Each structure stands twice: as structure tokens, then as C-alpha cells.
Amino acid sequence: MIEKMVKVSQYYVHAGSSAINVLMKFGINPLLATILSAIAGTLVIIGLFSLFKEHSLLFLFAVASVIGRLWTYHLGYDNVMLVFLLLSIIELNFKKPNKFNVLALILLYLTLSVRSRLEYFSPHVSAIQSIIWVGCLLYILIYQKEFKDTDSPGTNGLDIHPLKIDS
Image 1 (cartoon, rainbow, N blue to C red):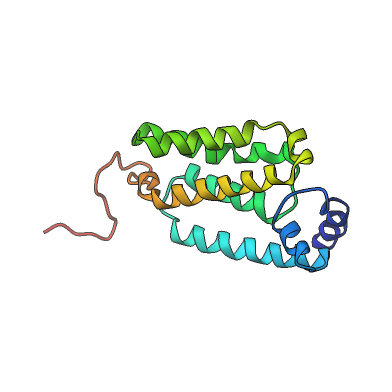
Image 2 (cartoon, one colour):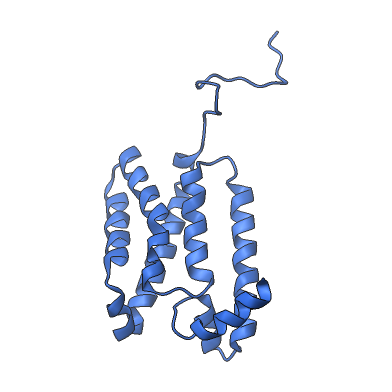
């Protein structure tokens, strides 16, 4: 399956915008760039998921969507996968409304509403989008305590530990 994925990606790797394209600009061949990017993306996502395993599913989906969007080739119509990042920023705006949260929301919304045709006319549009997406990811990672699941299912917010004995 991985072999087929790599073969098919050779057709699309030049058209999309991703870490693969960045590596190819440094002279790395597309096959090696795809493999390196996949390894890096997998290691980053495993590391982040292990650090934030106690956080909400929406937060984890937001992290996965950004890493997934950036590590492999995607075209403009694939930006819909970043809806989880958008929802996370919206949730952050409801929990802690401030100017920076609103700014992050506006910038993210603008990058997701850009018509895909604009990306083909200017390579700078894709670069700006990627920078804003990474910035929003870093922003929710900084404010990650807002996404922490404090209630376990079935506890109704009570401090219940199976091995804890009250004296």
C-alpha cells in the first residue's frame, strides 16, 4: 500500500503545496522528499499526541489536521480538513475572548476562504497560508490548557480515582 501511495504521489507532488515541495526546492528528489516528510510528520504527530493525550478530541483533531495538511501534497480543495483547527480557534474565542483570539480566527478564516485559483497565480499565497496555519497551531498549543479534558466520561466532574482510598 505504501509503495502504491509513493508511486501515485509522483504525479501530484509538483502541483501541491507541502513540506515535500519545500524539500524539493533544496534539490531532494521527490521520492526521498516524500519519505522524509512522512517520517517527520509521523514523528511530530506521535510526539504531540503523547504530550497532549489528556486533551479534547477536537484539539487533537486540530493538531492532526494541520500536520496532515502540511506534511504531504495537497491542493486547495483539501483545505477543508483544517475545519478542526477553525473549530478549535472558535472554541478558544468562546472560552477566552480577547483580541489575539479574534485575530487568529480572522486570519485563519481568511486563509481558508481564499479561492484555490489564487494559489496557482501566486506562490506567495500558499506560503502565507501555511505560515498562518502553523501560527494558529502554535497558538492553540500555547493555550492548550483550555482544551484539557477535566471530566472523564461518567464522573460528572467528580474527583473519582479507582485506586484512591479516602481515609
